[in-house]
Structure formats: C-alpha cells, structure tokens
Image (cartoon, rainbow, N blue to C red; front, side, top):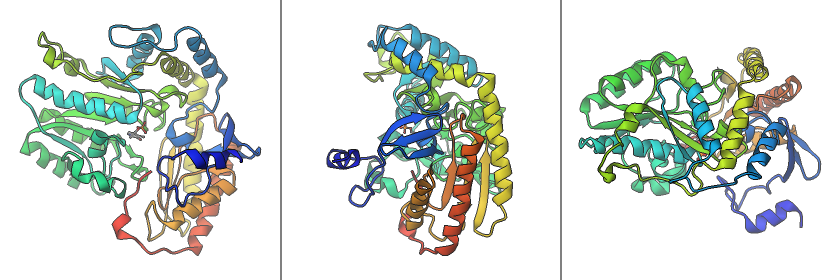
Amino acid sequence: MNLAERDHNVIWHPYTQMKTAALPVPIVRGEGALLFSEDGTSYVDAVASWWVNLHGHAHPYIAQKVTEQLNTLEHVIFAGFTHPAAVTFAERLLQILPQGQSRIFYSDNGSTAVEVALKMAIQYWNNFGTPKKKIIAFRDSYHGDTFGAMSVSARSAFTVPFWSYLFEVQFIDVPTPGNEEESVKQLETCALAGDVAAFIYEPLVLGTAGMVMYTPEVLDRLIEICRQHDILTIADEVMTGFGRTGRTFATDYLQQKPDMVCLSKGLTGGTMALGATSCSEKVYEAFLHDDKGKTLFHGHSYTANPVACAAGLASMDLLLQEETQESINRIVQRHAAFAASIKNLPQVLEVRQQGTILAVEFEDGATSYFSDLRDTLYSFGLEKGVILRPLGNIIYVIPPYCITDQQLDQVYQAIVGMQEIVTGKRHHPRPDLDMLHD
Ligand SMILES: *Cc1c(COP(=O)(O)O)cnc(C)c1O
C-alpha cells in the first residue's frame, strides 16, 4: 500500500467529502515555495499551505531556532509559569502590532484567537456590570470553525447543521466598492439600537468569502462609528497579518485602530500551530479586580508553547529583514502587472489585488465551492505543478514571500490556462449552496 492508500484507511481530512474525494497527494519534503511528492513531482505552493507559510518550507533558520528550543524547553504550563520565548515574542509582537495594543493572550490557532477576543469583549461589559448582548460582523465573513467563531461567520452552506446552535449576530454588508454607504448605514442602525458589545471584521480582505476587498477609508468610517457608540472593535488579522496585504498588518493602512487583534496562520511563518489575541490596556484593565469572578477564565493546554513561540520569533526575524520586504514589494509589483495583462480577457470578470494577495474571478454562473468547475480548475492546477485552491470560480494566489519570479510565472501561466477551461464550460447555478467557503 502506498502512503495515500494507507491515509485513506485511517484518516478523515478537513473540508473533504471522503466518499468522493481523490486520494490526497503525499508530500514528503518541502523547500522554498516548493513541495515534493513521494514520486518526486514538485508543486509550487501558491496558497502558502492554507495561507500560513511566509518564508518557504523547511526554512533552515526557523528549523535551527525550533531545534534549539526543543533541546532547551519543549513545554511548560502557562498558568503560574512563564518562559523566555513567550515573553520575548510578546514584547516583539507589541513593537510591530498596530498602535494601542498592549497585552498578548496566547492560544493555538485562528479560531481560538477569535474565541478569546469574543470572550474578552463580552466579559469586558459584564465586568462593568453593563452587559451588552450583540455582536456585529460582516455578512460574508469567516472567523473560524469553533462555535463562537462560526457564530460570527457567514451563515453558509458549510454550517447549516449548526445554525440553530449559533448565537445571534447582527450582520452588515461588506463595504465593497459601490456598497460603502449601505454598509455604513447598516452599522449606524445597529449602533443606534444599542446593546452592542463588539464589531469583528477581516480588515481590507475577506479571505474565505472569495478574497473580497474593500478600502481602508470605509473601514475607518465603520470603526469611527463604533468608537462613538462605545462598541469594541476586533480586527481579525489571522489571514491578513505579517505582510500579506503589503504592509505588516492590514490595520497599518488605517487611521483608526482596533481594541483587539487576532493573529495566527503567518504568526509562526507557517511552522507551528499558534494563536494570539492582543488587546488594548483599556480592555485588559477591565479584568483587573479583587473579585476573582472578573478573571478571564480561558486557557489551552498548549498556551504559549515554547517551540511555537520560538518559531514565531524566528519567522519575525526573517520578516523584518530588508530582503523579505523587497520580496513582498516584488510580488506586489508582479501581481499588478499580471492583473493588468489579464483583466480584459473575456472570461475574466474581475481581478482584485491587495498587496501579495491576488484574486481572479472567472465569469461563470456557478460560484459555488461545490461546483464541478472548482474541482476541474483545482485538478488542472495540480497537473501544471501548481497548488491553487479555487473558491468556486475565484482563483487566488497568496504565495510564500520567497517564491521566485520563475515560480510566479508558472502560477500565472496556470491561471491563464484555467481561463480556457472556463470558456469551454458552463454550469447551472445551485442557489441553495451558493455560498463560498474554504
Ligand atoms: C483561517 C482563518 C481563521 C481560522 O483560523 P484557524 O487557525 O484555521 O482556526 C480565522 N479568521 C480568519 C480571517 C481566517 O482566515
């Protein structure tokens, strides 16, 4: 039995219909932007392994720092104890995080980073004795797969079985170009109705919604309204953090700063599972009390795992190098040139770019994650040696920053090839399952 067959006997994969899915591609090694399968085939990792990888696979510097940490201290309980990696990483995160963040709460993934932020926001008001019940979120948002994170995410086809278990959220439209005023109006209406604890948002780019983008100017207006109405703001930078949007954080494009920031994915450069929720001193102070009931009673066994923090520190060293910043700028420019070259093709509905994130929306009736087109495009990419996971008819590129020009060309060529497939195919929309997701 080969690896894929052994896998098929014992493993249940994420976001995968195990009955019909093709056998998984067995990857045995990674180097730079490339992944190598058992039979020696190489793939350009154009999705940064689900948006986590920043500096390439098996990076020797990160590997060295992780090894040193493993040989020194692999883990220690984080209640009542601390360790150098967690403290140093928190100090350094606060130096690069948007202004106003003053405390780091560690967890182990993006969903938990969001859960922690939501719990901080809700308990913040409870601790003052003025509980507020409502949370505002974007209608098409994605904040994770645990129950709180699902609750503040789009009511999509992926969460149907759980809808009746999710807490109620006030959804407002995403302020995409042309929809700004409507979105602002909706937020104002919610704010005026009162009882709102927090507004959670993916700044500038909604990833899972299909790399949907909107401007910093309108987000500034939304946050400003929240300020005026005493609504806490939570920036979910799980995907956008650490250079993806061209600046260190998407929030760096804004005048208004959030009360809390959620981090994961690129936090360790894609090496280890780690989550972090940062908050302002104002939020933190609401939990300081002689009454023990006002404590934030939340924690995970692997909170602030030293090896993960060491990976995070090593990744930050690399991120702050001039060379990496140059690579980011190079990708931004190459994306822009490619976008300009394809935007007038007949099958291309829209090309969107925010920094190193590029999305190409193909014309097609069926924008569903479940459509055959999605599977056809996905397989086509693999045949061309490129890992691209279409969100329905939307192809996106979110590469490791070390990707070479040649590898980028290979990715762009695969996308141009996909355009021809789209021409040959027409699909019937399935309105009951028309939500995008990944
Ligand atoms: C991926 C993602 C999450 C969830 O992170 P996990 O580590 O997959 O739980 C939350 N928010 C955003 C914006 C994301 O892209």
